[in-house]
Length: 74
Image (cartoon, rainbow, N blue to C red; front, side, top):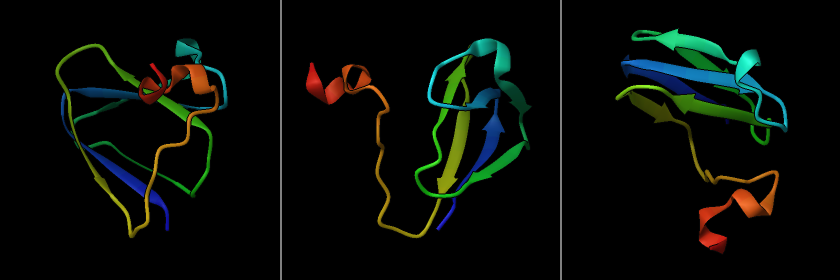
């Protein structure tokens, strides 16, 4: 099931790909929405306090492209 994210407040920046590149991210303001199929490589970041709503039908998990980025490995 697709991962669906709605921006409740603030601005959520999201981009496609296995490498973080803030120049390729799209800024989604409050009310913005995006949806990705499972295992689609993407990245996201915020520059201000931001609230998002994530919804999907499980199971759901985070998969880091680079294991060094996974905070569980520190």
